[in-house]
Image 1 (cartoon, rainbow, N blue to C red):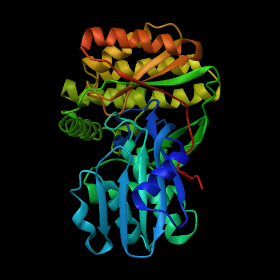
Image 2: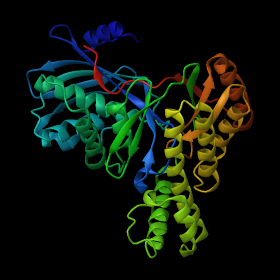
Image 3: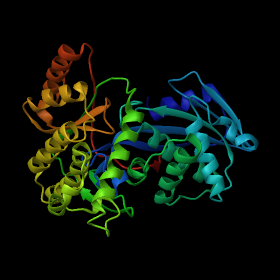
Length: 388
């Protein structure tokens, strides 16, 4: 839907009058650096051109009314009962943002909000971060009349998800949604949130995201299991490397000299993935700075293979998509993105090959899995911003 169409939809749902404002914040794709964030390592996400748009109007009472273009839900919330909305099937993320802003000292005002999402939900592209950052930006601007520090909005988003919604996420998703820049990726050190913007000069290459369309029922339990395994690996390595506080601080050559202290071979495999994945992120950033897209694609392939063989978070759906993608002409690299066990893959594909790529990969995937994937062709876009 266009902005004009969204404004008309807003009036149809909330009535005419008052000044309308519009805000947008994107989802993100992590190009490389998977399961490194909670290990104090490096990640390399980019904001995408899919995301959340909000049409908003300030209210003079203390209520937040909101709805979405693709859902029947209508939320009419009061600041007097903020914790009553934690269990909402839709709207809890937004109310968590409102509460986190109030706790930070922002005098959040009442408002009417219409949400329109183009990021697929549950696909590993962080539609939730897009909603959080768009909401934080919207409420801050409407309430103060000023533009916020977007890094602060990222921390507000993480706080809302951790403390209100109850999801123990890192900050990568919110950071990418808030701080993304068109035609750039974000090299982010998760230990201290230091970052740099790396030019993503893809020129005649597009980012093609393929969604497995698999329901990810095992993700929470397996995610927690992997985190525990990494903690065990670190504890073992600290017996000989007492100055290391994260797996992401350990270089590959140091790991090879000390991995013998990890008695459990499965735990050692998890550590190997994290440590070499951090090294691949460093090398990927260097390759992109040198304009070497082919080398970057090679690192993407190696990342997926490690996630499949060492971290074991892919599964037949993701592996089938990646295998099919790599066979296609014009594909420079392909890997799973996100936590795994379903969700999406990301591939770099030459522009003239994108149409055939989607057709052939869909055919190969459907033949093996029994149902079709979905595709999203995107570029690296800007982070959260006000449209008008």
